[in-house]
Amino acid sequence: MAELRSVDPRTLMLNPANPRRTPAPKAMDDQLVASIVAIGVIQPPRVKELDGTLVVIAGNRRTQA
Image (cartoon, rainbow, N blue to C red; front, side, top):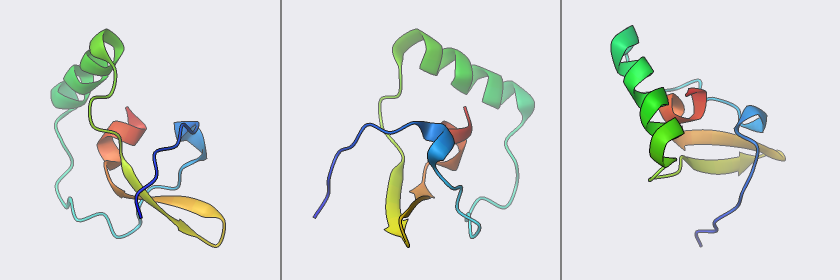
């Protein structure tokens, strides 16, 4: 069952099996950061808990931004 939690994104572990193979251009990352600063995160990252650690399964870029 899905659960919504507020956690510090610095505590999340990025997915080592991230399906994104090509890194986004720096300009796109800058735009993402500006958007998050201006309006916040609209769609939070999806995570799963493995051995007490929250691992990002969708939203690595949002987590890093």
